[in-house]
Length: 309
Image 1 (cartoon, rainbow, N blue to C red):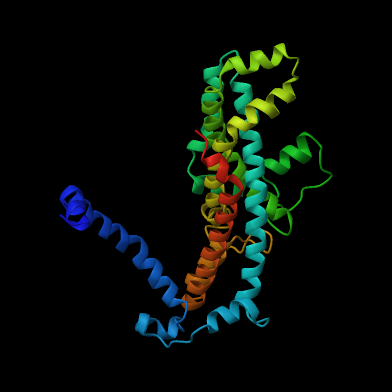
Image 2 (image 1 turned 180 degrees about the vertical axis):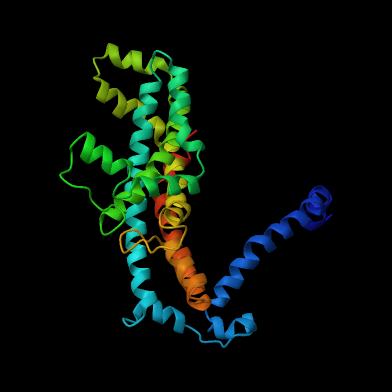
């Protein structure tokens, strides 16, 4: 028998069963993606919407307008959104991983009512993201709960600031995201910490290692593979974050401003609000490429950790 005949004799039936599902997955995932990439080369807007994929072909004109046209209002907002989104992803993931690891260490120790504390800390993770955005949007108002607490109760600030206007908007979108995200990181780190052999810590104590040295040379190296996965999950979540900002600023009716506009809200507003489907598709393709570059960089940093056994 030839090599192909042996392969088909051994695996042919399995591929016949898997084939329809695989074909369906390819169509569902790659069909819309390829269509979206093609739309980026079309002059697809309100006037040409009836033509859909038959709209006038403009080549790289949409990409030129987004990247190089200083007169384009789409380009200005897109550049601001890229900057804010990257900074948002960096700050949110740094705070989320730090808080999650800190509280995982606390809950990994003998603690009174430890089960109750674990349950209470998990509650923010249970709340849907659109509810988080809606509630925090009310809390950030000038006469909301946060300003009342900071100014009238604790007297930390001399006057009530506008959290949803100007650079403070960045703080207003970061904190709710961290509040909702860190419990998942905590639970994951807690599960990983409970798999670390206690004999390693006991041996390090006998050798005179300090708590910081035990964390640096035992805990952290064993947690790096888990950290890699959590960071990937966090990056994808923050780079494509939408619900919290969308709900916080008037259910999408309000403009979050230069420091609050993320790429997803920017693309949604310019594509479906302004009917710039060609420009929106081109911007989405550029964003996909930027995300792929970041993921490749992540893989290069954690490649060895992902091979850990």
